[in-house]
Length: 188
Image (cartoon, rainbow, N blue to C red; front, side, top):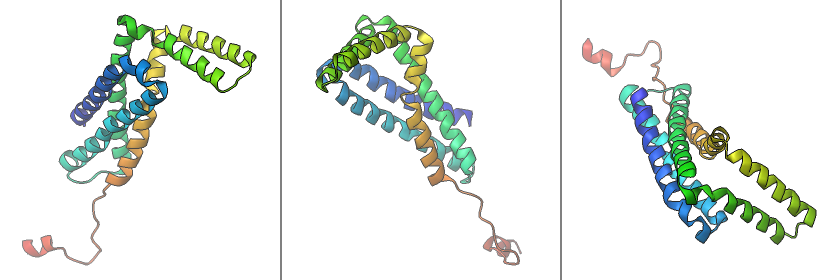
């Protein structure tokens, strides 16, 4: 199980991390709204490896049999590995690449502009500015930063694990009592 989790989790994490690293420099050009849609689309695509990992485990290690609980557990482990890869890449980029470190300034400006465009009162805009300043300060803490980054792909992985476990669960077929199977006929 460990091998399956590490392989599929690492591939999933590599896909989401690579696409995030490629996309972040273009957020200013495509806008935060489009970037968010694109980002979550990539996360969903990368989390398809949860399904592939559960299926691989069921077919190869489980002999074609896996319970919902086992499948869901494997899916969650693959998700955690994928999310940890994603967080690691974000942390390295955010704290070591100068232009990436300005991400929160750009995001704060976007949120304030969005509040102004919605016709918010001057008090509400000032509250938004204060809230974004607090959030920016919190985001400078690597643990807070990592926790916030982890929460981006994790819910998607949980949902994908749940759906995959429901689809892929397969119990050993039980034969009715008193009936012989073709296997019994061949051995007699």
